[in-house]
Length: 119
Image (cartoon, rainbow, N blue to C red):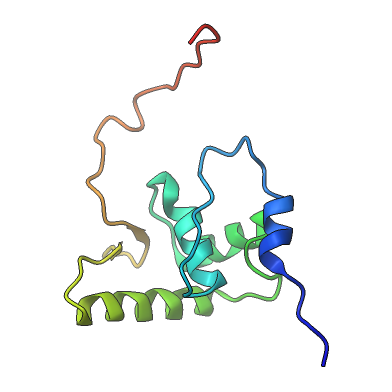
């Protein structure tokens, strides 16, 4: 029986380390949840399609992944967290997009990051 290729090590090798969104490690829920956490780590809301395509582009998800996988993984994660009485990790917005369940910084878009070479 042939072994499947190790997508996690390939994703780490191909990772753009200049990317501001950190790589978020999953804890046993699968590669789709790792991709969701990694893509949504920057705080912006995205649709399931955007999460899927960005996960494929970053090499976190396989090239045959579908947006339905992201929707199903998100729904089951939120159901498990709700059933355990935990605060949901993500929110589903009225337009169907997803975002992390953290307060929105009202100045996030207005603040330009400045990199000082002396700091």
